[in-house]
Amino acid sequence: MRMLLQVVSAQNTYGRLENEQCTLFLEALQSMMVNSMQVEKPLAHTSTATTTTELSTFLESLILCYAELVNKSELTEKLSSMTGNFAKSLEDCAFGRNAAGTSARRDSVVMLAWITKALVMRGAAQAKSLSTSLCELLAAPDPGVARAAVRGLAIVLGDRSCAFEKSNGAKVSLFFRQRFFSYSFPLVKAQLDTGAAATAKLAVVTLARYLPLDVLLRDKEEIFPLLETSVRDTDDPEILPMVVEILHSIVKRDIATARPMFAAIVPALVQSASHGRTVRVRILALDCLVSFASDSTKDSKKAILRGIKPTLDDEVRAVRRFGSLCSNKWSAL
Image 1 (cartoon, helix red, strand yellow):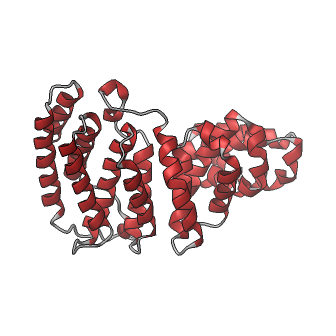
Image 2: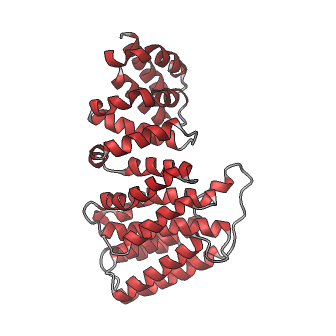
Image 3: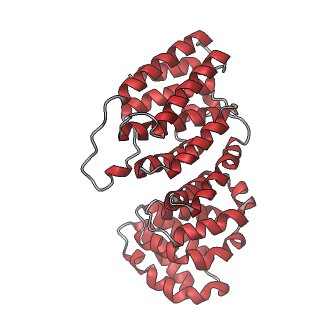
């Protein structure tokens, strides 16, 4: 099935599918997706089951193909209406306006995100209303649905499929990420003072993670304080690695811009350097600490040297090397 869907998408990439054929394929895909969501999937017996946001392999293949066709096809009135109606049905399911089960609601959010991505990338008029719905779902009472909405933001902004590249026939409008950010950031920010604050913090960091660096630096007065707050006031394991990646990008571009954040984020960097879940996160955190080492930050010397000690015995050689470099740099101050 996955291979068949790839063939269909590839045919459309090279302009070999007529509008009527695209409509027929989209209708068939919609029918298969709806049927696939009818059966309520049992929750796994794990502590994280309530926040699972992964689609089944079959359903993911269907929605990826559907989104590719929506992005690459000519949006005739008929096709646009059909896509809009399907997106509306997904919204109704995601918001719990029908009798859909829990897993179907989460699946609907992720599927809605892929359609939003297809339309945002091509600059379609429907994109703004779908982006708004995705942000409103961050406040969903079900934590799994809210997490799925956060994943949706990453789907829209990220590069998760090579099929959405210009070289593969995708329609990519200029500054589509900036446009999506302008839609979504005010809505996400407004939720920071509500009961959905924890999810909103993760959403802010997710938006910043995928935002072009030039835009991030341009809006630093508004975004940087939110990043600091997100790191300081949460124990969400997903936030810290993303903040480290964002900070590393900023530090490598302009260390002076990041220095005002140092006091607020140094505990997070030390924790990530010593106990980061991945080698990449540990190395990036250590590299940031190396860059921050200067006379203006030497008051943190003892805390940093004590905190990064575990990196000197890390099981990964590259981490030990960066740990040694970091230790030497701060010891020399």
